[in-house]
Length: 155
View 1 (cartoon, helix red, strand yellow):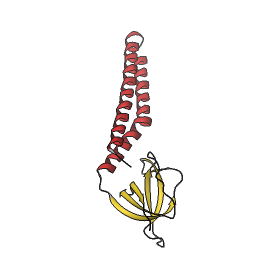
View 2 (view 1 turned 60 degrees about the vertical axis):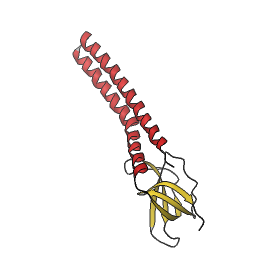
View 3 (view 1 turned 90 degrees about the vertical axis):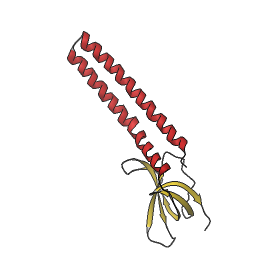
View 4 (view 1 turned 135 degrees about the horizontal axis):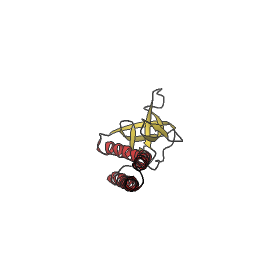
């Protein structure tokens, strides 16, 4: 599910947001310097503060989530994975915000069909959702409780 191209794509997105924020900051800085020199110093300072607030807002809305996703991809691509065969009990229909990080689909699985102990696995909502159906056995490649890859098995 995850490749090095995903990681490179996210790095390009971060660079794009950074460039846009720097351009916006440079525009506000230029305007504030011109206004401070020609009109009034407090008005120039006010324009600069407004520009900083706009840059912080854009970074928080567009940049920070992409940086968080880049860190997640880096963990997935370099971390140790394990294989588990599990029986799927329930699949969440809507992505949920987990770990104060990103949105994931929740999948409840069991080690055995009669087992009462359930485990929650998380599938990245930014990727194409794999064709998983309730009541079937799958082999999951996992990093912690995040699904890296999934294959249906016939048990």
